Image (cartoon, rainbow, N blue to C red; front, side, top):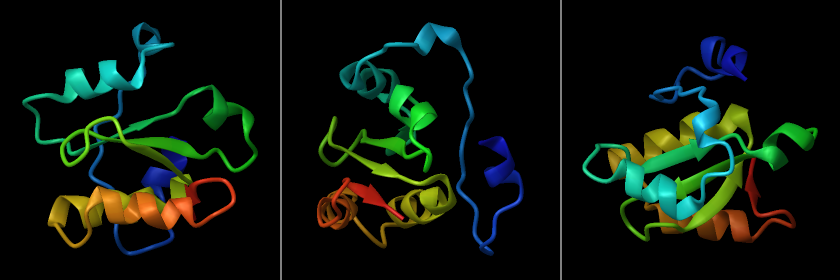
Length: 109
């Protein structure tokens, strides 16, 4: 996964803090929302069991500000678009979630 972030195919990259820690294994969405309280992170991206088992590796995106706990999935190559647009205020998390809901697997590509 880190390779996608280091060599993006687009001119934009996601501003991410990567945490690789087994302590977060099986942590709930609400726990991630609570952990993000007080930070400037409006979206938390989680590589969970589905991410690891699905051939497209769809990462779980969790809203921590607009509708805390709302989720959708995003393929790694599109993470930059989600992070950049939410951080810059170009799109709300809810607008991206609606786009994801229009797909058969609730995933932004």
